[in-house]
Length: 274
Image (cartoon, rainbow, N blue to C red; front, side, top):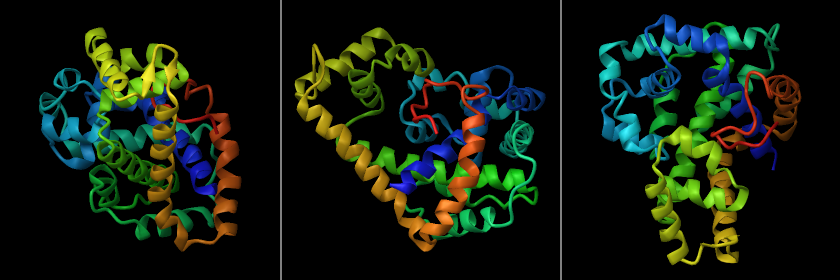
């Protein structure tokens, strides 16, 4: 599915805001010192000065006690507008290392997809879509990638919630498939006790056992990913396959240059390599 393939590329471009040293420097210059204050502040900023309950709900997979270290106190350090400016400046500085110019054909396609998206029930995507389009082409490219990334992520959360899989259980289900606990757990701050309790809940539903995913668990994961992709694909229907292929053909080599530096793999985000 080309839409899923393009998501992987857009996700990689978005991820420079977490891992690139230029992004970290821009966040710290705005007062967001430390990786996680930068992450929480810049990712939540499109929502305004959101409180802990809202941020926990939309981030989904993070321990509430972990997010409470940043929210709402972070808004006493930086305003949402300042955080947004910092994340854009950092992303542009990071991408400038790999992109000389954005071809004229790319941004109009991405903007048409964003304009066609439905935002009901997609809070992070909607908040990003409501931001003004930057005049800087690199900033606009990153903003489009981020908006579509969060659109898909909101849909993924909705599917997980509909299937009765909470944020920690989603991580534990993934770990049963790929052994990612050592990468994810330290970066989402769930305790061993909480993680093991989530495993117990999944085992009680017949989704995992001592060997990993059960057949039932594998089918559920496949359903979640397939349904997420289906929901994410809807706005892409407004552009032609040749247009998607052209955008993908230009973006993919850039995304591949970003891996594994500055965007490491594997990483807690969990997206495949482009």
